[in-house]
Amino acid sequence: MQRVENNIKLRVQGIILCCSCILMAGKFAAYYLTGSVAIFTDAMESIVNVAAGGISLYCISLATRPRDAGHPFGHGKIEMISASMEGILIIMAGGIIIYHGVERLFLPSHLTHLDMGIYISTATAVINYLLGWYGIAVGRKHLSEALIAEGRHLHSDTYSTIGLVAGLILVNVTGITLIDSLMALLFGTLIIFTGIRILRKTIARLTDEADPEKLALITDIMNRHRQPDWIDIHNLRILEYGSYCLIECDLTLPWYYSVAQGHRACETLQESIRDSGRQEITLSVHADSCNERHCRHCEMTDCHYRRHAFEQAEPLSLHLLTQSDEEHLLNDKL
Image (cartoon, rainbow, N blue to C red; front, side, top):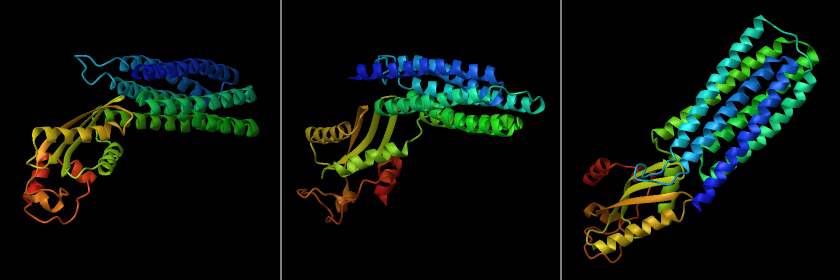
């Protein structure tokens, strides 16, 4: 199954790369026909699309390699490197676009065949949007950050092209060539912000920044499948490596449980999370023993060692689940 998913990722990225090459050729043809610096900005971003697409294809091929002794968690994080490089390339392209936009403000040129440039740019915008939608859909389904980043980049390219076409229509109607340069400056700035946004997200993933959405999802799963002997869960941590996910947590169980009973309880927790996720999940559970503080919230009705009467169940909140051992120990003492 994993091999099939990997082949799908590679095939989709290959399709995107081939289409990006064709679109780049079309955009440069439109630039040479019209002399429009705004169309030049679109063509420059296409170079980024092709370069980033090639990097993504290479990184996805590396990420699909199976785990080995040197990479026990797989090679999935290489996709973050791909997305980061794409963000850097986008920022560089935005800088080049702004440079040429400023240059054209002081050295304006005559624009020709604007109608042909409008037709070509409109066609590339439609194709880019469809490619971006395809890349994001497949990336989300098969948990490929590189494909998602590529799809979002193509969508940002689509939106900038739509604005570019609107500007070209305005230039064609009014004859004011200054609009062409101003459009280049505007979209160069927007492209830079797109690159910064992609870069910030990938850096967060590379540095294992906590994902609130993923943590909230695991919290919901644990609450829905909670068993009476899951007295408390804390120290929850999630690490993602592409389509591979490592989850660690501490599970508080009745202190009188045998090793076999504790093992069964941990397996039940593992199965409930594995059955609810699309990723290849490894769950590491550390078993803790309960103490007197837990009696008021413990739902074990057949416990013969209870020190306090049951008052109410304590929901597994995101705050409690992510508490460290030190924070949890402090709560036990309060």
